[in-house]
Image (tube, rainbow, N blue to C red; front, side, top):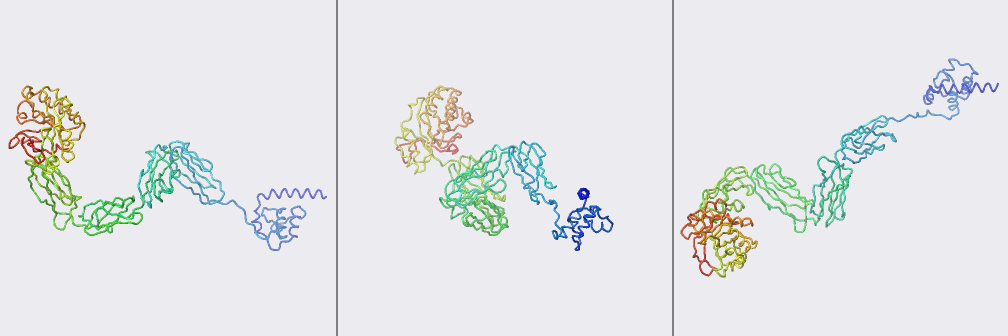
Length: 629
């Protein structure tokens, strides 16, 4: 009998386990319990589950705690636990947590071929299983999110966790072959900071996370990596240091720093006061004390509506009338100021001369004036000469322009303000005030200092004669040396004995040998006075001989010219137009009241007396100062 009961109980236990698969959870069952359950109720349910007591609707309603439609050993167990006090509260149901948020450290990224990047995912459920997947073979991704750029192209990395998903777009560019920094060599003050930026060659990329910045002397320069492709170099000591950037593939660039003591003073190029007209610009510059440094200067205006200024460069623009203060400040707080007064722009401008007559060599100052209450800054005035060969603008300062007469002719000098107002002066050049002497061994010992004191600034020295190198003028070296020391402008001449065209080459070579690469200010002149050549050579050969000499001289880097008398220039055998058209200098010997031909130099006398030379000397007027270097 007992064996039969055991078999029956075992069958009921098996059924109970099968039915329990579809039963309510223990938590739901406990919610149905009552406060008067006892061990007697557990005994009743046990007898019902083993078939000792027939089940009724009333008993099913009372004891079917798991609502599976039967009374089983499971109901008995629940009642026993409660009746024995083992369970007093409804247990919390254990369920799988549900994720609501998934975040990535980036959603778009560019990498160079061969570069790696750690893609991090953060889920609001701890220990969530995170999966990574790439859409293309050009990019691979490991189980822990390491992205590898394999080849040029694009891919999408999909990240999944607890039913959520996010995507990261990856573009792969070519690997860099070169990298540059925005600075390569800097001298800075000991308290300054510099932002370094890297740029790779076109069409390539290196991610900022993989950039390595180092300093080879952290006692002088420290380096701090920032976001993107920048780093901050800070000067912390005096001396030198080199900052290096290294890309993921080993490509490098450097910036060398020379750190000096930070300047404790500052001055501006404009001084303490400056006037500008509306619409004008001025470029401020600043200077630090000796043996100090300050690379960065911060410019500012006290009223940007009156005067705007470029913060880094110092270029300012006058916008309307008023007075402002311009500040230039260093990183250590040291500053300088300039008071800028902005006046109306000119409506009229005039010059102190409308017409002017000068001689070659004369210098004159033209001055501009604007209408009352207006201002035109000297640095905004544009001075122009219509013919620079006639009038040369030497310099401009304040409101004036210094001009120099260079050759005979006419030139118009025009001044234009920043707002387009202009005035002009017509200058005519006739005659010359520039004298030049030519000397040789026949003048003996010359006192060139006295010549200079008496206003003689130009001298043409005989270097020698003929086609032999030993035919150097006996006084050439001494004359050249003393004239140079006295500050005179020097040219040379070479006396010709040639009677054949090709001998022009030979005599040029002898001349160049004697010159021995000396520096000259004026041309090398071929002295054509030898009568046998003048009377026996035809025009073609004689002119070709002169051209051959000049060509050789010019090939050696000197200017070249011809010296001869007016009769030779005007008649037989030298062709004036050929020499003129070739651009060779023309030196005319004509001892009269004027030169009858157009020339650069007119030798007007062979019996001139000057202080510093014993006896007579040849003297000339220079009519074209453009021949002078």
